[in-house]
Image (cartoon, rainbow, N blue to C red; front, side, top):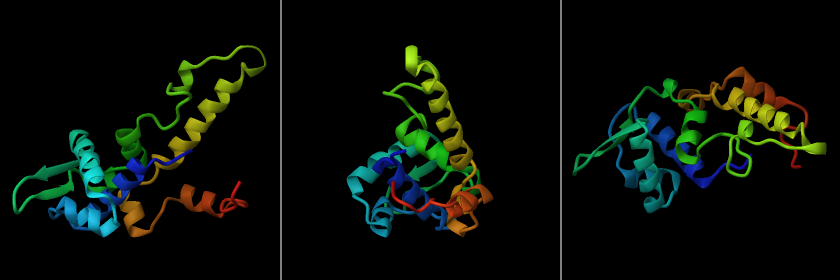
Length: 151
């Protein structure tokens, strides 16, 4: 799985908001705190606002804040907002692709990949990451033999 810059930046900005204890945070502050390009981040924040993950207020006292508590926002939701479906095959959902001949069972592999991604990404919330108290599924898979090996 390739994590896009949009998803990475969105999560980093949301985690910064989660750490702000509910106060409004300016886009410039979010960008600076995570060393993100402001223009790109502003586009991402617009998507996050439209999706209902953040709220914003304009003006000198304006900024962004989480629209829901951090424990209600999981990583999968953020990735879906920024990038679309968690697992795709040539831009289509795994259940929409079919194969013939020797590749006829490949769709089952793509479906299994999507299930695995969901199991992890839907289990982890912003609050989990911010607190460092990650769900067991993350700790377990992070300790698995070869988890940190490059392949």
